[in-house]
Image (tube, rainbow, N blue to C red; front, top):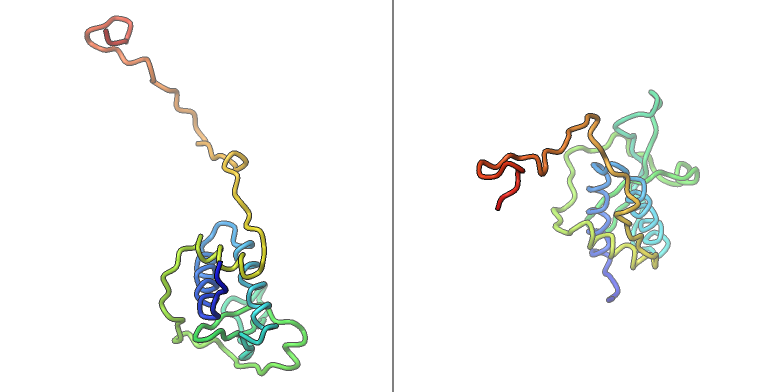
Length: 156
């Protein structure tokens, strides 16, 4: 695979982040986003802009997130204790700003980020997934239909 540009990585992070917000189990997607951003920061391909107050305080306690810029995309990640000492606090999040529109599939975005991080992509095993069953029992009527031209229920 080719090396990815910073813009490719920003689009992939955006796609993963957008899907994580509505995923039933978003932890793996948020970890992928966070680790990619940390690596981009180490390589000086991303920069810390400032701290923002979060929109939903946890247990009625206000807390902050760290605003990161990667090209023309902006993301929030949890700040470190050091960030509170070295990064300016910007106050409330500006709700009017939006990242650029991006069209990238989640599967491709994950592939890009896994490759960049040099991680092995987890393959889902369909047989190990929990199957959901209805909370009520519906008996099958398969083979019990009484065809008009056969007393046993089978066609001739």
